[in-house]
Image (cartoon, rainbow, N blue to C red):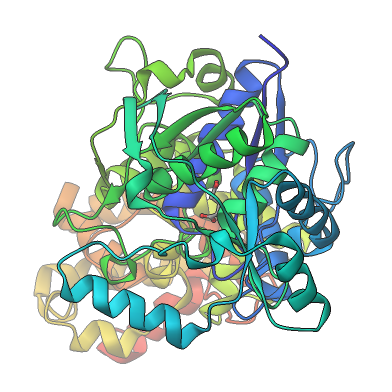
Length: 500
Ligand code: GLU
């Protein structure tokens, strides 16, 4: 087998959707598995819809997703340029070659003529396709018209017959030439069509395997017709199934998060998304393993295990995987990733300094087990940043702590003792709690529940052992939102509840 060369060829006309992200991932895994090359090519010949801004975003999103490419518009490579808008000359030259070989011809039909033909075919209950009217025009006449400046498209002269290939996912696939007609290669404005430029590039870039979404399956016979016309060896083709939403309709924006950017903003980790998308349409040999490192995915990936039936996107499962990767991630890295989420919530300044990051590691350690995604972080740390004693007294679930005699006794005994302590830590807190237990006769839940509520304003949450140092350290940091120390909280509570 020649060295494997695959490409991801997005059009910069919008954000990278999960379907495309999965296509990119499968190409990347395939390349890395075979020690081949993964190429990024920008298909920006649709001048109206393509935007530089989208291309920039696309590269950034792919980098965030964790894929690296060996050749591409930003990197160059032996087959540069990798942006189709910079290859127009190549397309023109090859089209002339096809015209000379009589595999292609100039078409002067006006849009109105073509539309009238289309309507007539539809009326007659036939599939519309180009009639081939300009096929028979003598070449000299066509050349004269072009030289005189008449607008002309270039069409491929598609021979009658069938176009078939052995799709590496779908198996043997056949299309009749009847369904395609002589399609356009270069429009009258000089812009190449997708089916044309993709073949020129795949051939010149020595692509061995075309792995793409199955929305392109009906384009493949057109592309095969081109390989045939040029006399070029065709690559292998593998068409990946569509991704569906839970309602089994094609996954789209209305199903929620669908672009790489959406997932990034939600606080999904790229490693979780890679693992999740790898299993969307592919399964490991044992059919059960679900958590895979990149190395393991690369080792095991093969197109034979890609399934042809559509895959259903399951946000819950992605969340589950994300939870796994959040727990695995290095705390410092997570702390860094958390900053934008907490800055957005108004809690921190961005960028955060070293001390804040260190403190955030503690915070994450306390709240992580309840998180699916980092976007849930602000809600999970509310009790750290937004203590409000008045609110505790108003809360249906919390007010009893200020009203119940037993709870009041506990807090009355506890508060003055805690307020005396300098440099509070959990050990000192435990010693005081023990003394309060002795003094009031309350223990277990009767003792710790009122303390928790008075300190955090909530009836449940992370262990006090973790929270107390977080409050103490946090109160000394210059954060955008001041974190109240244990003493500040208790003073505020005592005043509000009339305990002092
Ligand atoms: N530019 C095409 C797309 O984004 C590429 C299709 C292909 O891989 O051939 O759908």
